[in-house]
Length: 102
Image 1 (cartoon, rainbow, N blue to C red):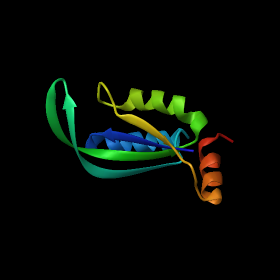
Image 2: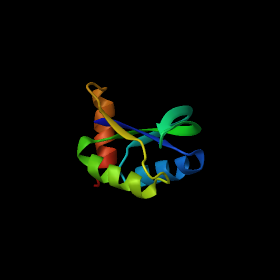
Image 3: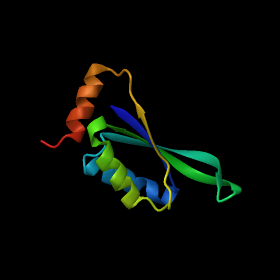
Image 4: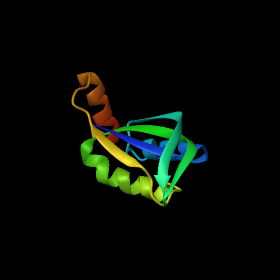
């Protein structure tokens, strides 16, 4: 299992989340507002964004990453994957069934 963090502009968040779940690249996507402070092209910037927490299976990561890049409006999207060390076994079973086609 992986949790993938992606920041997006608010206007793109819902469409990206729905696409990833509908295409079975993610079992679940949670979205919440964040204030990002970052360095971009030599300047410190600040933006209101939405943080997507995407839950998926490790073997789906490459396809998930590619699809996020296709859907994402930024030139360089933040895509950070964190391995899940432990999870409720029943949740993990549900996740795996949600991201693997029948």
